Amino acid sequence: MNWELKLIALYLWVCEGFEEGAAAYAQRLSKNTKSFELGFTDEEAVTVYLYGITRKYTEVKDIHRYTKDHLLDWFPKLPSYEKFNSRLNFLNNVFGALAGKALSEQRFPQWLVQGRQMPDAVVDSMPIILAMGSRADSAKVAVEVANKGRCASKGFYYHGLKLHQLGLCCPNRMPIPKSLLLSGASENDNTFFKEQIAPMFSCLRVYGDKIYHDEAGRIELKRMFGIEVLPSQRRKKGQKHLKADQKIFSTLVSRIRQPVESFFNWINQKTGIQIASKVRSLKGLFKHVYAKLTAGLLILIGF
Image 1 (cartoon, rainbow, N blue to C red):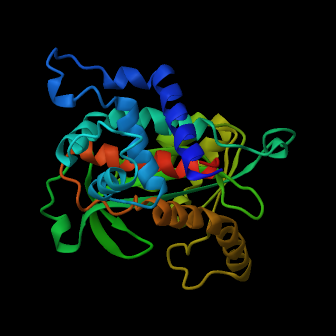
Image 2: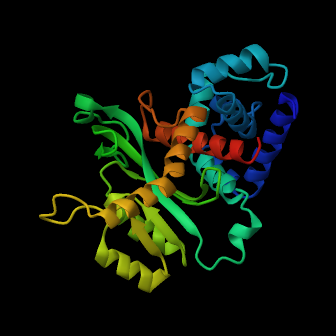
């Protein structure tokens, strides 16, 4: 499929999303809509931004410049950069609805969704960084949802969000995302999984890292939802070294979990979702995260 057909297909997909309910998030309560330059529609604004992300442009300014230089015949009423960026911020909740649509359209092999009583899944989180290091203590952006937390795998503190994923394991490829949710950076991954993710599923075998090592929680999840949690092993209090069987089990879990880290690396490489240091508002943060999630999920299904 050439770029023209991809652009048309994306525009039609966006229009379909608006018809299915995303338009409700773009309704204007004020009669003064002059500043939005309605000759350039919301569907066009969303299409331009998503298409730019799929072309590996990570900044709104770069996407606007690319559209002005190469796609002006397609979008002749493209507004100025300032008005374009303002429109995108206004549409931040639309991107959230479209991300849900793209997630629901992920393709699962028939053998994965049929005939298996307890599919394997992996769970993990990725930081969305607004500020890090010494700046994390004084950061004031989007404090309604963002806060300070620690990225344990890389050993740094940051101000921002966490993107939590539960994906179904599929041999020889990245896990297929089934749930993608946001929390503040300080949220404990295990607590968030038990309270927000697990109740959405049943009859899963879930592999996680050491933070999911919670015996009481494991028993409760098994009883309530039929979810079996298999975390990497960790030393008990007073235990200096893992036993041989614990090391072998942890190695096995790590191998199964590795693809979920590959998914986060992949979506960050494709969209630049992890670094949000140029975001200056709550609306801008939601636009950044949900639009880039949408674009990444669309790439997975062939856009």
